[in-house]
Length: 169
Image (cartoon, rainbow, N blue to C red; front, side, top):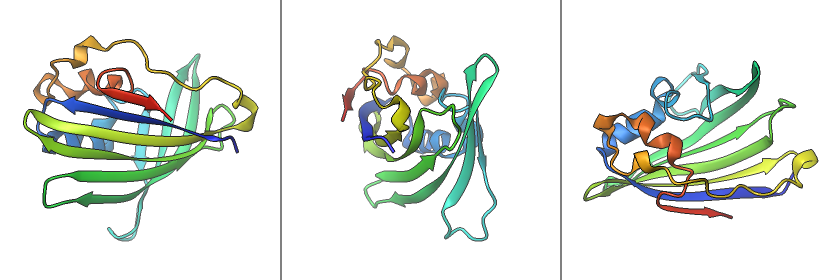
């Protein structure tokens, strides 16, 4: 397993925190805006107390797909309105750069929307470990005045870019 690498992102999303939460927690609403996943499918579980397992696929071009699995390891809502969602994921697909990873998404109520914070750590396969770590991508101007009414897909594909604070750790 390669050495873990991580990304921390913090951004203000001008939109209702309940709508932001809904669009990030429900697969059918998550897929259209998160370009990292083509399909996310929840697997059956016997009770609400069990972690929610899922499978995912990502199209990478030229007809190729990468498949993986994961599970939501917990959700929490505080009296302040702050919400946190944690997950872990992995892939045995030989086309995947990522062997396994884990992270959280946190939503903090703010005067003009929701402050979104995320930290994700991944282990890449040793054969590609010599690759350079990711860096903040180009500016994402369309996110500047986005809101949930303006459709979340215009906001979220950019959240790993340099709007807000981004650190590779």
